[in-house]
Length: 247
View (cartoon, rainbow, N blue to C red):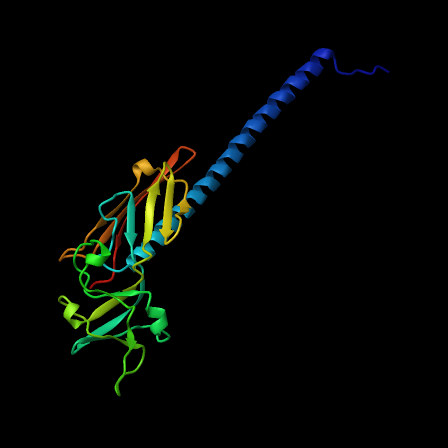
C-alpha cells in the first residue's frame, strides 16, 4: 500500500494561496472597520455640533434685547441673560414693578439691574438710558398690592420714554455671557469667570458670530456660521437666531 503526501511544491502553493486569502480577508475587514469608525466619528461630530448650535440658540433667544456688547466683532458675541421680567407702572415720582418669580425679595434683587425699553444700540452699560440698579429697591406697599411687587423711589424723572407694553427686564449687569471663537479650533463660553471650552473641533477661520441690531421691521438677529472639522471632513452649520424679546 502506497502512502502519498504533499510534495514540497504543493505545500508552498498551499501556503501562498492561504496567505493571499488571509491578506484579502484582512484588507476587507480593515475597510469595514475604518468605515464603522468613520461613521461613529461623523455621528459624534454631528451630535456635538447640534448640541453647540442648540445651546447658543436657546440662550440668545431669551437674552435682554439690544444689549449685545460685542456686536462689533465677528469673533465674539456677548449678551445678558434675563433673570426675571414683568411689568411696571409710574406712580408719581416712583416706579412700581412686578416680577414673575413670586419668591423674589429685596435681597435677591439688590445685586441686579432693571432695564426698560432698551431700544438704542448697545453702549457702555453705565451710559444707556433706562437702566436702573436695584441696590435701593424697596417692597411695594398698599391695599391693592399683591404678588412680588417692588418700588424704585424717585426714579421716574430718570425714565426716558417708556415701553409701549410697560415691560421691564431684570438682569445681572456684572455677568454677561460671552461666546468667542478662540485659537484655531475652539469655541468658548464665559460667564463671570474663565472661559470654558464648548467645542474643540471648530475651524475658526471659516466660522463667525455676528449680531445684527434690531430694526423697525425685525428683532435683533445673531448669525451663526460654525464649521466643524474631524479627520479632514468638514460640516458647516448656518443659523439665524432671533432674539425673541422686544422692549
